[in-house]
Image 1 (cartoon, rainbow, N blue to C red):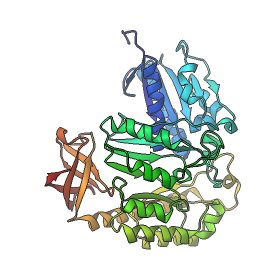
Image 2 (image 1 turned 180 degrees about the vertical axis):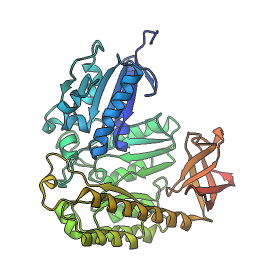
Image 3 (image 1 turned 30 degrees about the vertical axis):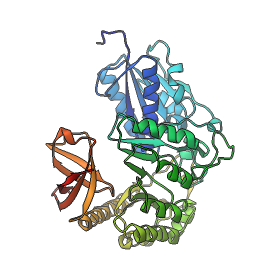
Image 4 (image 1 turned 90 degrees about the horizontal axis):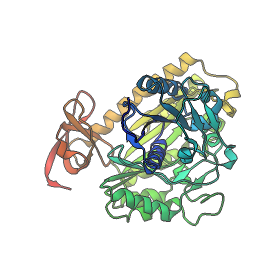
Length: 444
């Protein structure tokens, strides 16, 4: 067991890039209090699990992670934070081994809630009414990956009928531009080459700085200001709603010093009928126009798409509408989500639910389409010169990296390449689907 007096804390993050940025911020608060951070696979005094509630799977994963922590140290103190902790605090508190559950506003003050680290018979819950989550806590992740995730916005005012995020994170609110730039500068001083902008609805940036007070800046202002931060080589927009991705932003990225030609734009359905039932804030034509604009000014841009299959009322015809639309659209890959009913959402009570086996079949079809799309995109890049940023892991004798337009490359492992940028030629696609490369003489 643990012999020194300094307590050890370990973290496990489920879900999105935003969660990773917040886990890092919470971890720094523990380090400020004199804790040593260790890997989750190690024996620790405290295990903190940052939860997600977007899919059914994330809920099940939570229980597995708790069991893993208990196997490592059955006397460890286990705390749950994040979206699932806000939505179903009592459910999490009842999981065997969980000692503390903190909601949306409490998670950033976690060290205030931890006293003697003794195990509880039943998890202690501190969870606000989500209407109280009207303040903003800036976050960024460093030390976990080659790239840093920088949170610029939180919460969402949209009322999509399938989504629990507004219930888990509250109203849309944004960091001040000044604080975002300060955080970006701190990240650059750590010799991190790439920042990924994250939030629940990043294109909504500029709403509600610290509560509902009117914000003086827009998402476009943010993008322009970040482009001037010294020391940052790359900036990437993680995900942005099609109705909030304006032409001015697309054109700016095309000529930017640091923003890379990679967009991830949620579609959710290629059928206007389903988009209306989902209460999305655009129809298919808007999406088509965004993709066309990106292709016009950045022909080699990578475009990723989120899509949900099996939404209530999605007939075979409506699903094929989505499939055929995506098939002809010049995109690069798909993130496919199988619809799952979530408590307290409008869609959970809609008529004509799609049978589980049909949802699974449609999901498989779209995943197959994604493989073809990614392959076609990679093939279109062969023979071209790109810049790659190498990751930090040795994967079976290879090091991986991503080009600015998100082509994943591999080359024999060399520790000196970690977190460095190099100009390369893309030569061929390996059997594992990654792209082989050759170095040019010029180092970036």
